[in-house]
Length: 365
Figure 1 (spheres, rainbow, N blue to C red):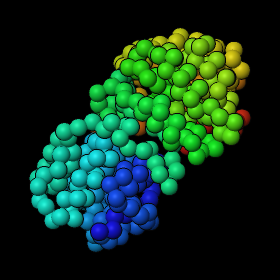
Figure 2: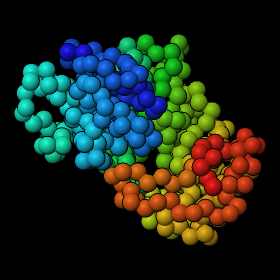
Figure 3: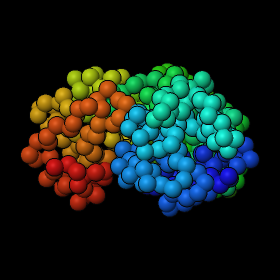
C-alpha cells in the first residue's frame, strides 16, 4: 500500500517527523503535490485548511487528515476526510495504516470519522521512541508541550500534559550528521524542566554534548524561541559559549499587563523589558513577538503595544508583529480580531520599511 504526504506550506517538518516514524515501522512516506493512490495524508493548519479540505472532498483515494486544525475541528474535517488523526500522529498514524491495509473496521484510538465519531487517544508519545527525521531532514524537536495555556495558542491543547523532552543522548545521536543543528521547541530555555522553573544545568549538558568543531548550533532563535522570564544571564552565557545565533527570539505579545494576565501569559511587560536589557547587554539582538487586535483589548492597550513596538525598534530590537488570529481549539477561537487603531498600519509600516519590523504587516489594517 502506497502512502503519500501532501506537501503544503508550513508542513515540511511534520512531513519529516511522520516519515521517520513510519520508516521505523517499515513504511515509506512519499511526498506529493496532490492527492494520490493509495492513501494521502494531510497536515492542516489555519492557513492551508480551506484549500486542502476542498481537495480531500474530491480525492480519489483514502484520505487521512491531521495537524492542529484537524485536531481542533475534527467534526468539520471528517466530512471531507476518510479519517482524522486527533493529536499526536507518530504512533496513531502507523496503527491506522495497519488497520486500513488489513481491511479492519476496528476503531483506532486517537482517530475520528464522520460515521464513528472520536475515539480518544490512549497514549502520549515518548519523544525518544521516534527519531525527529530520517533522510528527510528537519529540526530536532527537543521538547513538546507547554504548561502555560495561553488563550490564543494551540500548543497546550494539541499536546496536553505539560512539557516532555527528548533525551540528551537522542538529540546528540540525531545531530551527528548535521552541520547545522537546529531545534523546534515552545521554549528552548525550558529544556529538561517542567516549563515553569528553568533547569539550566540540563541546557548546559545538552549544548556541551552537542558541541563539535564541524557543526554550528542554533538555540533560542526561531523555531526554538524562549519565554522572557527564562532569559537570564546564565542562559545567555550558554548561548555565547556554544551557539552560533546572534539573535534571541521571545514573545512579549502586548504592552498591557491586563491583556497579558487575561491571556494567561504568566509574565508582565516589565519581565519582557528586563529580558530585552539582558539580551542587549550580552551582545545579542532581541527579536520580540507582538500581537495586535486581541478581542478584549482597548484602544489604549493597543496604543501601548504600538508604543512598545516603536520603543523596541529604537533600542535596536527586531519586532515581529502580527494581527490576532482566532485559532480552532483555543479559548479565543470564536472571537474575531478587533479593529486596529487608525495609526497602526502607518506606524508599523514605517518600522517595516526601516528594516526593524517583520511579520504579517500587510494584514494590520
